[in-house]
Length: 81
Image (cartoon, rainbow, N blue to C red; front, side, top):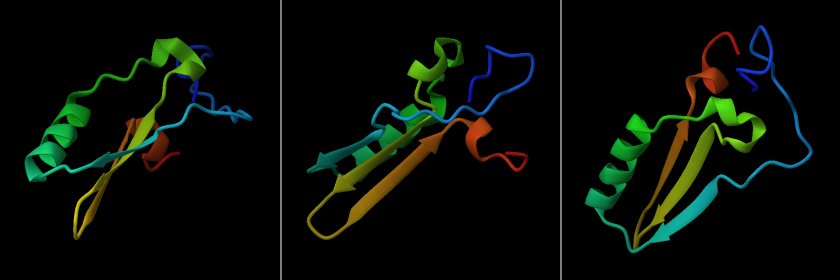
């Protein structure tokens, strides 16, 4: 979405987008909670246009479990979109 280039929010589909997925190994519950708290207060830079990622996905891989954290700007998944 380009939120600042047009008079109304405009969804733009690009051929390539920056990767927004990463993997963290050896994390514990505190690491997952800290990451979630950080993403909760993260300020998305919509003025950077297409260079700004409006979502992120991180897999915390542990011995017996994988925690997948999906964080996103509300413009991506709010009901009207």
